[in-house]
Image 1 (spheres, rainbow over the protein chains, first blue to last red):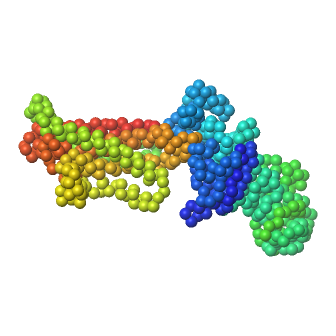
Image 2 (cartoon, each protein chain N blue to C red; image 1 turned 30 degrees about the horizontal axis):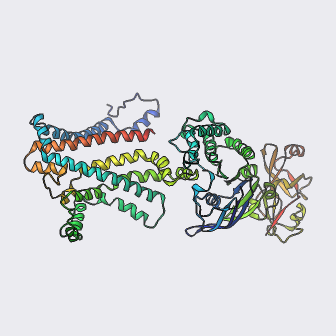
Length: 346
Length: 289
């Protein structure tokens, strides 16, 4: 089911949490709302769910205007950040809840509920826990039960608030992949909120970057990474080196190859893998010195200090491990930099 | 000479020193325990024992006659009536107030929270007096009530109103901190799953607050049955009509009917003990959950 948000604004007292949000989520997508904390992403999710009212604008789900509809009638599935499982009910009863509270004429029989709940628990691979209570489960298990509970009512839209936020790193990695696969199988339009750009890029088919209650950019993960529309997005998504032209010697800039060919921007953002490094023979033509390096698995991250008259922050470059070995660089060696691609901003 | 002896075998090195630093000397500990125990014996156990001793001082038969005389039975009936009316009402009010305060944002919320405590901070005599001023013969509504021949002061309705006022905070005070700590995510989850507001309250909120609620109801009941000051002002002490058990104790005592006074008192004391046991049980239930 598609979701259309038009012109949504929300204030909390004098604080404007969202202004004039326009967003369209096509059917079957898995969308990440990404942004730093306090950017309004959770508020937006809660507005879609009906847990929060808008000051202005409308929420249209599958062609129906749901703006004034109560959360219990919207037919959405909501997975809370801290799961919000009913602590006095077993796992089975938690998942069955949404079916049991249906009005009598649409409520399935006990047998059907039983079958359905076990099928859902099988789907999240936790049927063996059906008679446990939430406080006997691990974080990852609770998360999956919360998801099964939300899916039980066959929601037209699935909303997840920081679904992996409270989990430890290894569980998080597994669950991300699992969620992506689950979405692929179920194909229900889903939106999740996250502040972790890596998570958004890995899981989502569409990423919406929010900041200060505005949408900064919306697109596929690769669009957002390769063509950030503004400095905020560029800096927020992945590592980037920032060069302000006014803070560098012209000669140094010419040597490393930063040429502002086609825009009026004065600030260049350069991804670490867009900095090429050669070993320098002499100190004269060297543009930087290797200060330190770190192992990132298949990549090596090099921390470099510029050799020019402006003191400034370190630069970061990345290269494959083999290449780093071939260069045989040591800390303190001088190097030549070549920047092969930059994004320009004002 | 070692006044700082320790009950555990001392550990090596500064382990022993640490233990000494954390533990008061024996004489301090024992004298504190003795003072506490002495206090409890003198001011709680002794009077309680005395109540039962005095009630039975002329034999079990006299005790039974005292309990079954018409005025005492009427007092028991009135006390039960007051409790049966006030406790459910205050349970309802308490839940409503706790719900409003923990679930909604509105102007004057902190004022309301303070107001709930008012009956605790005001002397019960004044609480009773308020109702006399309102509904008494010379009170604001006195004339109006007289024209319709409705009697509030010096009759059961006044006693019920005064008791309602005095016992109002018990349930709300138990629920507010708990509901604040619980947050409302579980309720939001229930709503998002399609449950109605009532269903959400009944199947999600209530199970989570039930022990605290019972605890509040228990305290409310104990006070409703035991209240003296406020009730004394509005009751008028009409024998067999407007005397509750605590008032009956006073009336009997003033008549030098020692056995009668202490027989009534023993019922109230018994109620207190039952309340205490149930309270301990509930507290244990709450923490073991």
